[in-house]
Length: 394
Image (cartoon, rainbow, N blue to C red; front, side, top):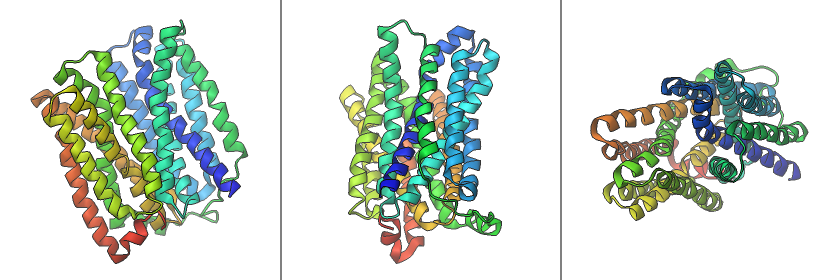
């Protein structure tokens, strides 16, 4: 039991670091643009390299975890984040920024995939509950760093690049933990079963889960990226107020994941997932239909709460169905999720230029209805044992 708790704590440290990875760059990008005299196109290409690094890591972490275990992947992930942060802090010219961003994204992608697969493996009696709790640590990293950077820069004279250097040093803590903790042994230590992997990748169940995560990730990143602009444009709020409104989304998600980790101990996930879809629809309605500050804040909170269940429940399902190739199944799922995370925000931007953000954010309720349809197909495919299989007690 002590070993399991130590492994779970290590996974939470890794996920916290991934949350820091995703939000730090957005917080320090303006100072980097000013320091190196970058134009918007160059800055946008740097952010794209982070996404490319995460996608590349999502492709490789699963097979490596199944063949060689978790330790090398987690160590490489933490090192990648640390090297990326350090390079950004010390870069003498803009030439250093591109490889730093790529290393940063690759390390973060390894941490994201490996920590989720690890929790699914060490929580066989409560996968969904454990994954929901793991997601809380992502939220702490995602919300905490921008707040910390804002407070530090407001009260001291530290430059953003100096703060990046201090964050790079903090990577030592999870690195030491990953070296000490006794992780589960590799599942395919004798060789990688290519035939089994081919069958897995052609499985309709995996495809349905991947499509659900495609929409899930797309909605999360769309709301994370466009909500502040929406509130600013539609409600005519100040920029700092718009950014504050975005925090309602992440607070809603963290709060709901804490509740979800408790609910999944006694309730089947197949019954909870539709309820959270209804909450998401209600949040979208409040945000888009009633244009005032109270409705927007409440809507964003409900949207975060409703979307909180997607990754824990769906990844918990994968962990139960593919116990001999958890890492590989998670790799395939995360690749599909990342594709959605790129497609839906881009589509929202294109529609926003055409019809305005209020109309373009209708992609959210449309995606929720798509999830409802796909989940019905998935539940039918799992058959009468769906409640048992998707339950956190699978």
